[in-house]
Image (cartoon, rainbow over all chains, first blue to last red; front, side, top):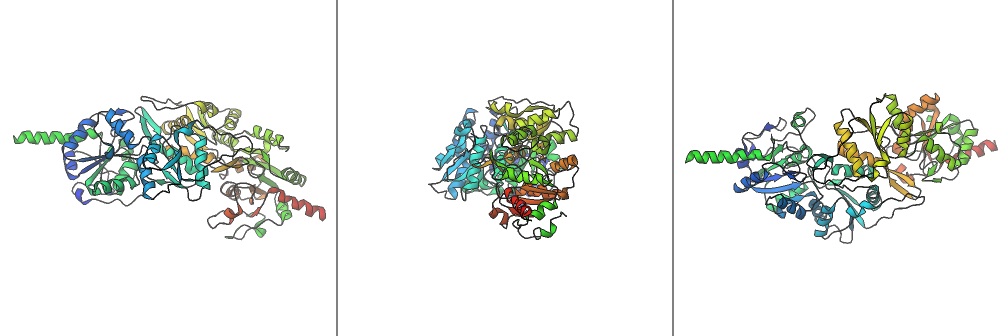
Length: 325
Length: 313
């Protein structure tokens, strides 16, 4: 899953050495000109919870006006691509469903790519985003929010039945997590021969509301790892599954991409694994202190406070234009 | 090296089936029994247990019961033994709920600090008994988190330790509260009563165990817990000290390789695996299994064969 860090030829003149410290981005114009596509994480980059981060709409517009392709990749599996499209719309951003790749979509896409048998089912420990994407892909499922109110009866002799046709358990963030779901998922993985354990992501914390960090999908995945003693197949960042899907769909080279994210062990690693330029923003879960700490082994090419710092490229272009008049 | 080396498993081979019960019993002074899958399954006593315990007591053996199940306190386990017709005192029982409290006492957990509990009444009762303040536990089982815009969870900055054990009332509120304490309270400890993957909560099947709750908090904090239950030898050290016994004089009897048997081996005891719980013969003998007890048998009542030998002699 964690491939070697490779330097991409398109950035050789810009890149720091693989193990050197990240530099503060001072020449946004040069970075922007050196790539064709920007891949943005969402939580902590575009928004925090349901609050748009300052300067995002202008930055998105500027990049589009410069002919850049924009793609939004999020590990947050609570919504489907369609639901994310509506969220962007509600926040006043013009982003289409086809430009969004959520880990809920990735789980369904993965199952489709391996020809998940039509008579089999998925048990969902997660929210409606996963269910909607599975439905869209024509995959049968059970579980999800509906199991949030179910209680365990542990009176003597009690046995929990489970569906022997469940051939995959998909686990993502679930604010309605409970013991019923943990046990159901555990039984499927341990007792249904060949049952897969798929994780949308393993993020430890995320800004589910703008006020603080909240325990993330890594919590639910950790719970199932603990009861099954199995490692999941992770479809979200930093696994390259979504990157491979994106590059294949849009026919782009990874060396032509700049990955922008707030999390080192998912976003930046995701970009590095595939040879993209990487830009860390400090508007989300990572602080400058964490980036520069001796314990941190993941160094992006650049870091900057928020994506609106890229707007300096617009000013430069305007300034240049004015000076040429 | 324990007294059974000469009759134990050959290094690298699979554990032998126990045939010489008398020699094993005579070679040790104390038997430590796991409970779930050894003495009972859920609330059902396993066949032959009362007679076996009686026989061992009559042969002058000390009996100690060590369980990773933190849902009850030692006192509550005493009542469970009593309800099943077994005469076992609270002092003979070492539950991981007790181990968590004992550990905090041993490192002089400050009196102005609190523990946040993900777990059941057993942990609360043991902490109360040890004079340690706590919050959380079953009372937080009905609390909901909706993640509405602007929602902020406050947490007590005096929480100096989070203790995590099996919790059938687990919910996101508790997971987030524990996560905040560990990530934001400087020096806050993350203590696990046990990491058992599955347990026989009812006698009918295996149920996701404490390892699930601990795994959840590992996932959100990226920290490793300090484990007080088996296979950590903390409880072994407690009881060896309490009863002034050498671990080489002990036979550890359990149904789980990665907790009971490893616990016994780590402590330098003889080890006997029973197949009346979570481990099958297939698992024991599989090439992936790296933990070999000195012996295995079907259930503890097989030890009654020693009585027959003594009677016939």
